[in-house]
Image 1 (tube, rainbow, N blue to C red):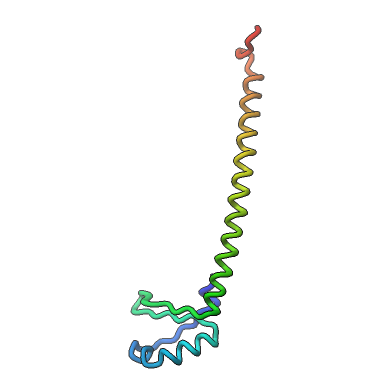
Image 2 (cartoon, rainbow, N blue to C red):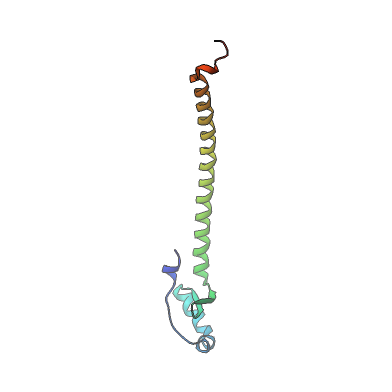
Length: 103
């Protein structure tokens, strides 16, 4: 989700990256981009800028709020389900003619 908005790809050697790390950090902080260091297909390191951390925090807060809402809805639906199950059991007992105690 954040990846497509916060990443641009540049190819460079490890030596060049280490040599220019200060520039890369400053430029990416100004550009509000994340630095991802890969070796082959594996991610070796991820350097987050302050803007990226802020966006990640906002996204986490949004997801936590949505999760709490979902938990409340689930709790409410479980109560409704129990009530409906009790009604169904009662209706089955009433409709079962063999179950009447005073025949």
